[in-house]
Image (cartoon, rainbow over all chains, first blue to last red; front, side):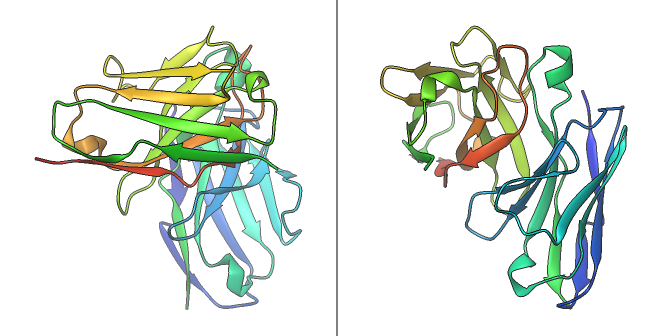
Length: 112
Length: 123
């Protein structure tokens, strides 16, 4: 099974900061990676898919990069609405005709 | 607008069963693969199960394999999760999630999520 490891687990930052979250896969997953944002008591919301494609309606301050085993989610200028928990998710299964997802353990972005 | 509404959660004793439902609207339900993803209190996201658009392909997390069954009724735009032999560690909010694809040759990402239904397994 593919394991996903996010770092850091918690990130303290201020409004206007540039922040980055890393997600590492235990084996190569090409660009089969998505990022989600989740706020307390709410369902996760898709931000990015295929490692770097921004979902429609998501602000352009969010960006994704990487391929293979290492990926990054970057918020260029942190806004008050961005304080939340972020998860990466692999879907390499799409390229191998198998069916499963794996999530990272999450990164909480909190106010410094 | 895609709308997914889960129901059927509640408090259940260990070893008992529960059936969750997810009513879908705002899109052509029969064309999409669907997943269940759960989140234990204060914990991260855990994928549980998936079914392709026509139920020809299904898969389960190892933690629920042999105890949970995912099904769908395309005529009623409804997804189900039958949960048997429940354990304390199954306590979580269960989300219904739409996959971006049909699931004919694998699955991709979840582009729409329901708010979830809470399942509590406790004696």
